[in-house]
Length: 313
Image (tube, rainbow, N blue to C red; front, side, top):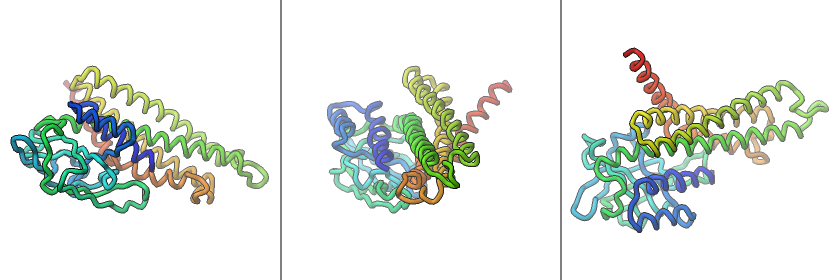
């Protein structure tokens, strides 16, 4: 749970500032976040627009020296504790791609209201509803101008997926190693649990899949670095699909490893004597944040379809 909150603040919030922010005040915010003195949150999803991140209803009214922000965001991780928010909104709901802004908001701006949401799987993570009531945002806080916000939003999603891949792999290794140690220490019928093939073979299979997923995770991160270097449109589209597929595999595997190792370790794995049950609950959330698994499969499916079209030509 701590890692989930940390990744949102230190990676998912900080990355857009690092990539697109300019000015001393932005540098100061970034230093506060990366040092851990302040907490960041990112506001994308809305009540009626979860996976559909494009057609948002949060509006921006343009003025000479500031913007006026109105709208509601939900599932804002760290929201009720955040000192800063990265927010996306549009000046024309009928042209979200061409009118989307990206900005950083200070908690001290008037008109911000946050309400914590109850999510039983992660009770220690502050996920919230965030409401903006005519919040005046000075233009120096804009990090993605009109229309550029849309481009920045989707370029940032790959970094977000890579962060979730890393967290999911961490959950997978935590539970797999815990299960391996426990099943070698715990004896039943006069033998360690791991001596029974019904236990050792499934654990071995999980380790094999986890090692392969870890290599894929490192590959996804290295491919993202290439997009930052080359900025080729075709490569960016490929990387979006690659990271989606890897995120699907890693987050699904983390959930499956946690569930299966509970069964292999027995009843104690459902108690707080071990960390497996908590890992399972966090893994369930990891599988849906950053894009539900069917959305990830849709992005990969669309990329495959594009390849087939090019081969046909």
